[in-house]
Amino acid sequence: MVNVECGRRRGAGTLGAWALMLAVLGAGCDPGSGAPAPGEDLATQRQAALSYNALSFNGLSFNGLSFNGLSFNGLSFNGLSTASFAQWFNADPALAEQVMRYVVRCAVPQGQTRSYTNAQTNTVHTWPGLLGLAPGWANGSPPTLAEQQMVSACLAAHANPFGVSVPISVLGRNGLGAPIPTTAEELATFARPESCFFGNVFQGQGLYAGSQNPPLTAAQSTTRACAAVDGTGHPRMTCAPLAYVGSCSAVCTREGTSLSFTSCTVGGVTFQPLTTRVRDADLAVCGDGICQVTESCGASSTYDACAADCGACP
Image (cartoon, rainbow, N blue to C red; front, side):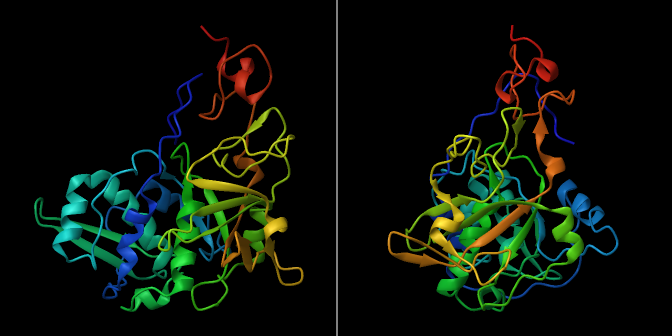
């Protein structure tokens, strides 16, 4: 459950060190065991609850990687057992824990984990894999260009300016070109097309997001605001350094009637993207009686002045 402060918005913060954050993928690491991660977080528990029997994990994941506070320096290392990794991790353990949770979730397949023992606290941190977008790195090799692109896209897809965890359906291919498995149940549940994400922070080529969602109404809002457009055709929020490129179909291609895009090109550079889908139920609507983190107080019925949910401003 998200603790919402009525009438107050959280700042978007900064994301100035994506390349530093992703330096963890500069070289491979040994595959971890398949044992379940101890102390699963709420998002993991909720993700399991969303299986609906027939709906397996497949491309179903939870976003929530916060933009705020990721502008720190010092992450440059070749593996989880190096002194440089320990130095980076201990500079801000809480933030490093979150970053690594998403790096491993994106890169490593479901059923495997990666662990790090903090020598300062004698604490073992274990992160479960899920999407398996970097199979070569997961097996101990340096990441390929495709794996760099896929993990970059994945981390961009999992970030939102509010740090709020909501489920997303991730479609696309891994670094070897194999499609992320999905089911009819997943596609039916996550029926709202959302965005395309791509880029490569390893090569300093940036991170990009495009939109394919139906425009939000004036009463609707979403924590996924960086790539959700309204009636103006512009995203509700800017989330630098995530650059908005407009409609996905304008810069990306797909094969036939596929629901996912296969490539996106910006500035003459072609990237392998990920495509996301969300649930209509996760949109906030002014008038539903709940003051969401994306809504503000006011004297209207729009998301940014929602009297019905957030009351009048002081």
